[in-house]
Length: 269
Length: 244
Ligand SMILES: Nc1ncnc2c1ncn2[C@@H]1O[C@H](COP(=O)(O)OP(=O)(O)OP(=O)(O)O)[C@@H](O)[C@H]1O
Ligand SMILES: [Mg+2]
Image (cartoon, rainbow over all chains, first blue to last red; front, side, top):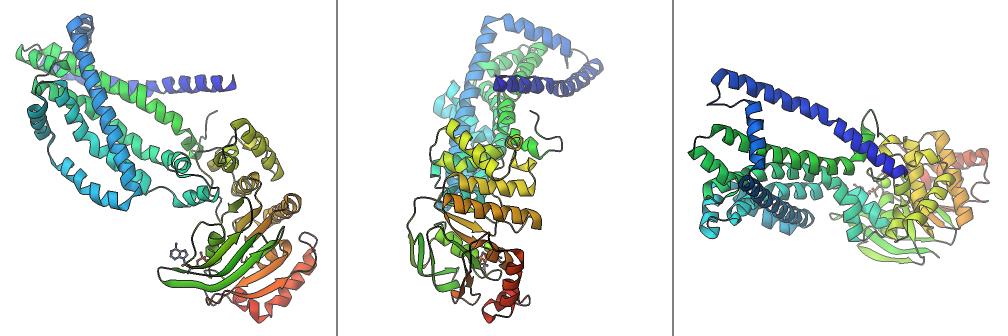
């Protein structure tokens, strides 16, 4: 009961803090409106016009299917890249030899331009979802890798020795000493990955003509349907905002409650 | 005998810290290990607690479990005081409800209030953190406890309180303790026996068995003992501030 109330309290506070974020978004909308009034509808449709277009698109069965396709690809790409990158990063953080081996590999991956990956993936996977997924994975893998590596490398060894003095096993030490510390390195990496997963998916879809929102964007451009283009952009941005603020941030906020203890206002209970 | 260190030697990066150190710890005995800064006290303690392996010699432990109180509290910042105290119990796989009950009992013993138990370490005062660290060590019902200068950072009044707490806990729970300190008065107050570690890699250079029981010695006799030892060559390094 007490825990339930505390949870509701936290949910309420998290939602309330959304007002500040909404204020920022409305500033962007105002600038957008100003741009629209300056250049006219053909160059930049008004925000309201775009929102209406989004509402219209949401009714469209084909568009809903395309959006779901993109969401699945971006989600799969995100999950794979975060999983592989983080696990490899943790392994590299623990093992000096693994780090020496993997660092240059990651630098090589970073050095290849994403557009080259798209071309390669097109050759390997053809015009299918695989191209988008693979591009997301290779483009954002290094970020999670670096996060995992830094997180493990900077763990507090004195706390690790404390845990060993209580005969805590390797898994318990990872769970109670290393992972809570790593969270603050991993979450920035994961939010960056989530944001770029959407962008890269749409880009790869557009270039590989593999359907999804990117495919829709390509045909809207061909038809010079500008409101539709901005509507698709808005939907993509909306997805990115949703993953960050409805999925990743609440988890981080929950896990890092203890950090508020060091703040002047303390932990709210 | 709870612990026997037999002719151990250790070196860091080829630099010897000590050679041929032999030390034992009896049942229910508190041994104070004193010595000047940098002579290797922490190293001896870590070897005894199995946190590092000695280069030479043997360590024999004849006890079920041990706990270490470090020089700094070393609390996990992401756990509340209660969960920190229960950490050793969690490592032993004890159920959550049981852990809570045991942690609360130990917290009361070291003078932590129930309302402080939900706080994170960052919200505790320095003294409360050190109490939490002591409670965490005692919570696992250790047969041997290793203290590494645990009270250097707390004020004189609280230090006495915490010393008394350890004396009482030792008498009640019958654990043995190796207590590292560079404060002779502290050693004289709470130990059965004092050993002095050389700062010239010679191992233990002096040993004194203290009369009476810990906690029964009054301040006067503690003071007199320390004063008398100030002239003793075996303790010279402890009083000579120029070395270092
Ligand atoms: N991890 C380490 N690597 C290299 N040298 C070390 C390491 N730990 C300790 N030393 C060296 O070993 C010597 C003994 O260190 P130790 O920490 O045991 O001293 P101490 O007696 O506990 O000192 P203090 O009273 O100041 O805590 C010192 O010269 C120190 O520089
Ligand atoms: Mg030390």
